[in-house]
Length: 378
Image: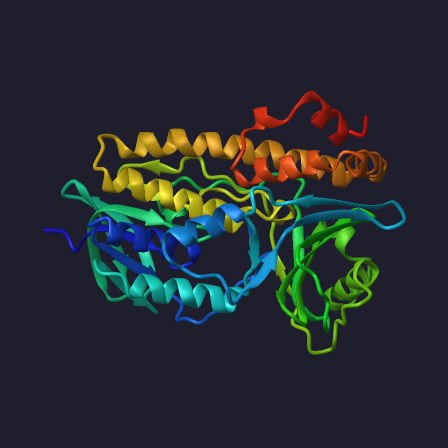
């Protein structure tokens, strides 16, 4: 006898969504998280349209969160290019402190789901043809285990799948900044010298602002984290105020990819399955889409579910890598960025389509040669 069909380690958006989907499909699930909700988490807090669509399928309303109509890229002194989310779809700026609580509560209220918050997982073993997750409250047995435990996944480490981040190491300083009546209805990415400033509306008078770059690009010698953050935020968003009480958090290094995302009855989903860079803002949405696909694979009881998930996820990762490399190439060179920005201003439909590719709603093949030439400034 097993305690459940699936045990999920991590009750963030991807883990909680997966638990809800499994419960509704007739599978039993145990959802573990060492945190007690509400809890906060460093994040870009931009939920792309694909993620909003997954939540709509779960009946999870996003009305309390800020609307996102698209993404704007800008270079001071060179103008900006605005991309729109197509087909009437929109994103949301979600405050993780509130969003994670809603998702965890939704999972806990789903029939067939046991939610155990404040319960840390300590290891994974295999026994009797299933998996055993060791916790502070005792062993939990299941047919499958899922690691939805974030960028530094312990489940990946227990399975021997962890790998070091790739160079060049990029980091982020992030905080919530007062911006009275900002009127922002989109993500804004400002390209500064050797770094990017990412802003998303989380409240009518508040912005989540993250400064992204390598260590030497983020801080001058002798400068504190708060000073460096305030300097970059002021350059990109003079309307925002970094007060002495603003909490500034660090994150990184990014671009982490485990050696495998599924095997021996264990799966990785969300950031645990790989994280590229906050610049493209796709992390939460891709995690929700992956949770939906994994729930379909497990609930259908198909043979070799690990192989099916690995094949599907590999295609998603290739798309994400290409878009991320393109974004980092453009932002890493001020000359390239300015040239591309001028062409995107002349051809705004290219950026619209690129946002669809980034969101997963369109394939890379939807980009024409004219789109590619615009992206490289030709």
